[in-house]
Length: 157
Image 1 (cartoon, one colour):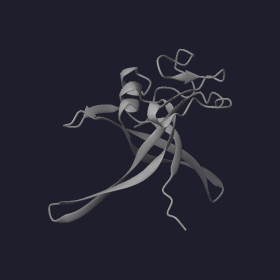
Image 2 (cartoon, rainbow, N blue to C red):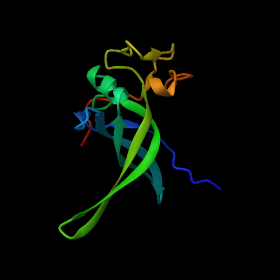
Image 3 (tube, helix red, strand yellow):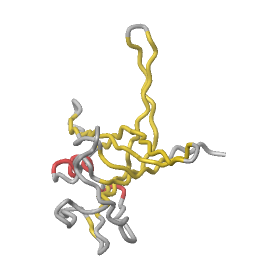
C-alpha cells in the first residue's frame, strides 16, 4: 500500500499573512490558523483550539496576500500535506510540522457582507471564493457556505 500524506483543515487566520521571497524570487506566504473543537469533559463541553502553521508557495500565496483576501479572522479551508522541518539549535534536536497548502479556499464573506473577487478568483452564488494555482487547474467551491456564526474581530490571541 502506498503512503498517504493529505490534510484538510477549516479554521480562522490567527494573524495577517507574511509574504516573502526566496533568493531566486519564489513567493512564499506564511500564516497560521486556529481550528476549534468542542469535547466533553465530565458533564461540560470544553472548547479548545489547535493551531497550525501554513505555508503557501508561488503565485497563489502572492495573489491572496496582495489582494487582501487573507486577513486575521478570515475563515479558510486548507488542502495540502504535512512537512516536518528538522534542525539543531544549541546542541538540541528540534523539529516543526507545517502544512504545505496546495489549495486555499476562502469561506464566508467579508465584514462588509460580500466576497471580494477579481482576476483568477472564482465566486459562486453561495458567497464562497477560492483561488487555486493556475497550474493545478482547479476551480471555485461548490455548495453553500456555513451559516454566519456571529464571529467578531475580537480574537483572544
